[in-house]
Length: 235
Length: 193
Image 1 (cartoon, chains in turn brown, green):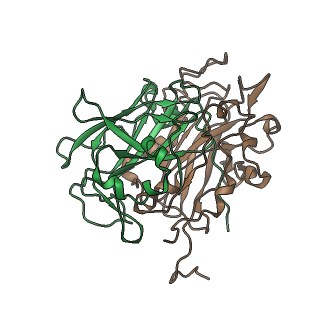
Image 2 (image 1 turned 30 degrees about the vertical axis):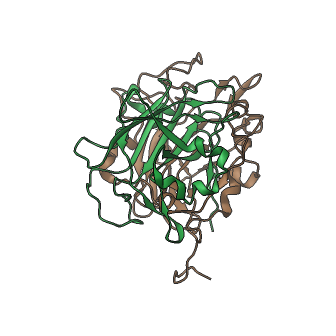
Image 3 (image 1 turned 135 degrees about the vertical axis):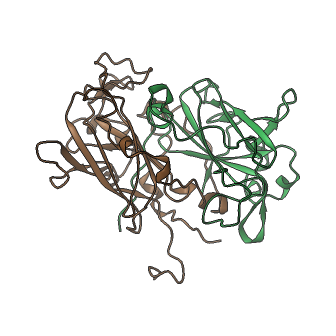
């Protein structure tokens, strides 16, 4: 049986065991994965429509009585597959820390201030062109205990579904030029430098809204379908 | 052609974005897949995620994707009519209470490759701190005679198949137990599809 979804791009992903990121040592499987065919169970997956998501959930700056502290930003881009086609009507969930580098999460004990006007959670659904857009504030860097003086570069967590169980992706979006990249074992868990760059957004003057918010552009590329006979893209 | 965006870990704060009820942000997913009117055999599946030292992972998330009691998926690539439009077949549960627990129905047998039939199974994705990408496995059901001819189980060494089989709890009718061992003795079989 031919694969419906391409396996070729799987090399962009990190290995499960990435020893410099200490938590992988006790959680990465030691046995090799068992390769299986892509059956109806894998090529199907949860598909959600606009009815699940409210437009205001894409604005993380208006969820409370007042405005959050920090640099207001717009993050905009397209969700595409590996053949460059838009992935419409797919759920995008995000979460992040506040401008001071503190998550509202109960486990986060970093002694930086919480912001009563910022939760740090949002969601949206891509439009017919695969476009998504969030308004939020720029997250701060924060310390973690992976190694001495360890700090995570500023990032926003992204979760996406795409059209099947195999296209599911959870990743992190980073900001251009972050001096912490070189010290971060999570960023460097992706072995290929060009693949790492695909996790970094770019400043975008077109998305920037005058006298309101800086704009960042970031396209997300999900696993794509193989070309099939009869398909216009089939060689 | 654009190239794939790499995976990164969900990290320790996944609840904020993916199961945010504690943070006063509305949830869109739950661990209850079937309302009482849904046809089929209603079951619960409970389990723990264990790391290489046998410690319970309290900061993981499990997602499941399954067919309905007739073995049909709520997805255009299946396309066969469904008994109920209320059954979407997807659930999400975190392990902050030590276990995950889903309330669902037992799926039916599903068409497999080359005219084969797959035994009833649930597709499982696991996310946590320390997992840089999702782990993917399946839950099969103890005692189901279709397991013997399942084309995916046949690819798994016989000595490891048991890690994919949920066991009924003799004390609690309808409850199946399925622990996931990420690493070490009795390591669960994980797939690459």
